[in-house]
Image (cartoon, helix red, strand yellow):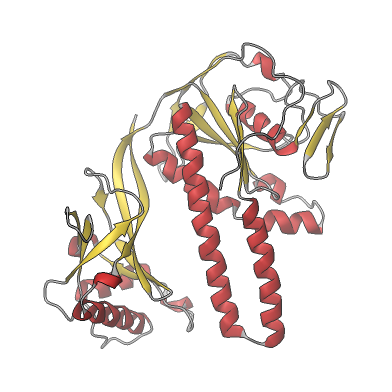
Length: 383
């Protein structure tokens, strides 16, 4: 099945290699862009960039202390690959000060596919450095047959735990995000007490940049894992759980984790890789024993252990939940034991576009023997 896939490739503009004229032209255009979106109709700005600003910027809700991305239309800039000592990729950026624009070296975080179409993009300024956020679109073929599933459980201790079926290989992701959040919460409290509001805004921006970078890395690792295993990605939907009152501390921890953003990153990266993503309800996945299907005679000890009094399972709680999410992704009753999942299944896959198309995918999944009753947390943790 062929479909369109879009993603953003971030490329750092090599300002350390720019001439003074190019640097000044970039700084001037960025400054004039900020002036224009704040109502200065006489801002000396490239005409097509004014049109892009009108299309993308919500001028009714601008923050005085924030610099906004400089949007550029796809028909007025070029990105080309050149084999030079300075850089492999170059970008020609339209500016009002230099006729024909300025050609600058860039370092993309990944290669830009030859057959990809570059769409309207933006330039972001962070800590005095410029980054081009290139929005690209490519026609990809979505796989219609897989050798298994990679189930992803979103949680409060770990931002995500993935379990591959049928092997149950497990990876724990993002504990440091919770630590980052806690550190910045303490920092914000101290800054508020001191009345340092400008520093407070800067700290919030710094926190989000650090977390967002980590989310991109985690989503990329999950998609690469699924691609290497030829596995359909199945993600638990936390919406029903987050609407429940689970106590003030657990509610705070769940709502503070960026689960929605991570899910979106996984979905668009997976689509670009031709990997399907299925979202399933997480209801009862934490309470139910993955091995025997028991739901009533189980308990969770702290945040780390799942115990089943019926079959004696003593397992990692997030691993247990992710395994059940994988079973749901295959359209199976989670109270069926894992050993009953061998065979061929055809779950309906929601592609999640505005067009909301559904496709049938074939998943070959064979469990030759039941997994031992005790499993360990020996799987690697994402760094």
